[in-house]
Image 1 (cartoon, rainbow, N blue to C red):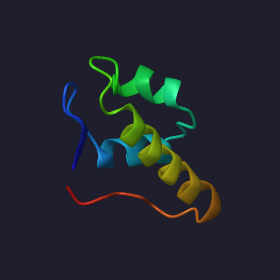
Image 2 (tube, rainbow, N blue to C red):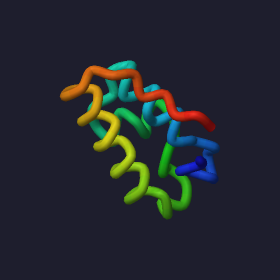
Image 3 (cartoon, one colour):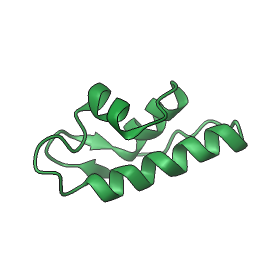
Image 4 (cartoon, rainbow, N blue to C red):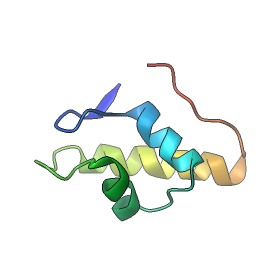
Length: 67
């Protein structure tokens, strides 16, 4: 599912970034441009990143989401 339509960033993209070590929203924006255009997706993008980071830190499981 697309989280940021403006920059074509999906849930899978955000999960992949968390698996690759992204831990904060500013870093996610720098690496994906997520929520750098209109900003409408910021709340959902932050929520998705927080869930992904939590899962990586506590479960240490792969988070790839089927698109």
